[in-house]
Length: 231
Image (cartoon, rainbow, N blue to C red):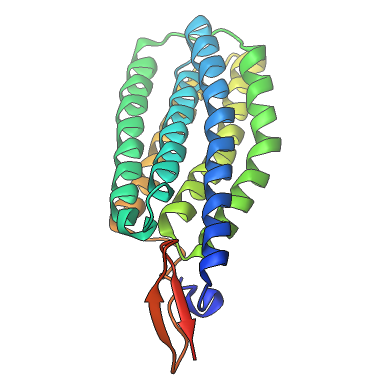
């Protein structure tokens, strides 16, 4: 989906403002997900929950994704780092998928059962409330900037919302019905979605085409990394 017509020509001031917003949203995501990762991995190790550990590692991936966006927009011409940013985000997705797949398969064949984790259930529920709003702001900013990398960062946050729902169902089924298979199956769902998102990021697929000039305009690359247009 191209947003070239929607973004049109952004002024240097607009691109600077949107770039700062992208960095602020990325920093917010990094802070939240760093806390989430520590809680999820710790609770997952205590409970023996591969899905909860996988969710925590996904939070680590989101931390790295946010840091990549901050790194990209620290450059005077952020779009020159767009492809590198997307590739780095893709690699982090693939690493997550590999780990969670291996651990989920091992858990399925070990016939072990994760202990109930009230902390994990509470964490998943909290993320279901917080993540949709952050994702919406990130994806909207990505569209306005014409940046697939910023949009992909928002997609990672949206993925966290879906994974929170999957995790919550798996943990509740395990805790209430003793369905030991629910936890590793939730982990495999997490891995499958991570692979899909990683492939899209690697290919540079997303919402956006770089904002360009309208018909009959001249443009120059401005100091904020955008295009300034004149009729």
